[in-house]
Each structure stands twice: as C-alpha cells, then as structure tokens.
Image (cartoon, rainbow, N blue to C red; front, side):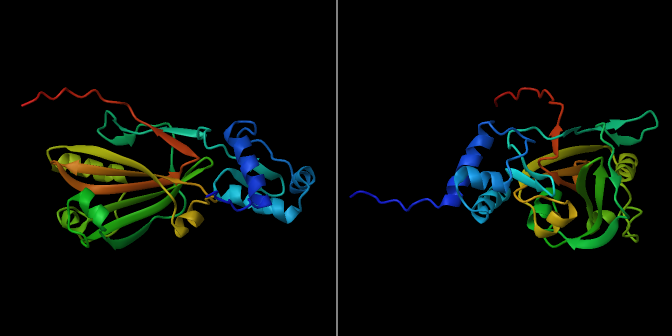
Amino acid sequence: MVEIKAPVSRWKQVADYLREQILTGAFPSGQLLPSEQQLADEFGLSRPTIRQAINELKSEGLVEVKRPRGTFVRSPYARPAHTEERGLTRGADGRYAEAGDIVWRDLGEPTFYREDATVAHADLLGVLAGEPMLVRATVQIAGDARRSHKLAMPFSVAAKTPWADDPRLPEPVTLYAHFETSTKGVRWTEHVRARMPMPDEVTALSLLPGTPLLHVTRITHADRTPVIMEEIVVRGDTLEVAYPLPVLKTRTAK
C-alpha cells in the first residue's frame, strides 16, 4: 500500500527553508534576515504566513527579533560570547576567590528564605528529602550576561555554625573560610547540565524563546561531608564554562 503523506503547509515550507540556511551557515549567526515583506514577496505568500514561519524558528531558538531593527540569526553552532574558567584560587591571606576573570555582582539585595530539600537536593547533600535548608538567592550580572545564584545549607549543618540562629547566609567565600578553619579541610565538586527554563527564570534572566539554560551545581564538602550547595543558572547562549582537567591516577585491578 502506498502511503499518502499530508501536504506540508506553506508556512512550514518557509520555516524548513530558513532553518536549513541557518544550520548550513548560509545565514550566519548575527545576520539580519530579510524583512517579512521581502520574504513574502520572494515566496509569493502573505505576511501572516511568513510571520508564522518566523515564530516557529523563534520557538526553536534559531532567530531573535530585535525591534525595530528586525530578525537576527542565532546559530546553534556559534560559541557564546563569554567563557568562564571555573575553579577557585586561594590568596596569601587564605581567602578563597573564583578563578575566572568574570566579576559577577549582585543585582539588588539578596533574598533569604527557607526551602525544603527536593529529592535531587537530598541526593547531592546526603540528607533526607524534605529537610529544611537556609537559602540565599541573588540575580547577578557581569556586563551583558546575567545569572541566578542560589546558596543552600541544610538545617542540620547550620545548627553547628554561627548561622544557626541567623537565616542570612553570607557570600560563599565566607562560608568556605569558616569550614576551612573549623574542619580538617574542604573540597568541591561541580555538576554541569543543560535544561529548559521554568517560567520564573524566563523573566528573571530575560530569556528568549527556545533558549536553554546552563545549570552548574557546586557542592562544598567539609571532612568529606556535603555542607553547602550552590546552584548557578545562566543562559546557555551567553556563557560557556571551562575547567582545568586533572590527571587522575590509574586504578589498579584488585
């Protein structure tokens, strides 16, 4: 039996054509697309039909509308404008600092609240799901880049620190210094993943349609016990992260 395929709508044909031009580099990242009227004249279609095709590409994150300038290409293969070296340095005074050259500053005052650990948080922090945590949350900027930063400490950990009765957690480097001096040592692990944004993140980070997020979770361990969790969320098309790659000792078979 011959399968009869449904005809492809005209707006989808236009979207398919423009998508191919973007993905093959014929329309490079940052290029201004022809106007709706120019595309309508070229394809012999109405402007609403062209607009529907453009909206499809917007939802895929392949174009960006900047009024009144027009519609610009966002190639998925183009590197982000900023690269951040992840890691920590320790100065002669013993204070920790972020290793990268990007300086993030808080946009407004941080907010402090209590949040119950999710199953994912519990897995990373080694606590029970539902355990209350102290949270310090901020939106931070560096030039044209914007990110959210959330610092969380379980109540069971906070009870043994100066912040047992004060929910206003300080900046991370202050907590690093506390655990450095009050324990046998600290170390860190980071987990990096990509995901799509939640509705509140679209507003907070001024996200464009179809833009994925880069989600970095840093866990601070003191005496090999997880004590702090930081969640850093940034636009995936704005920032990429780079890490020095350690050389690990080969494990011998038992």
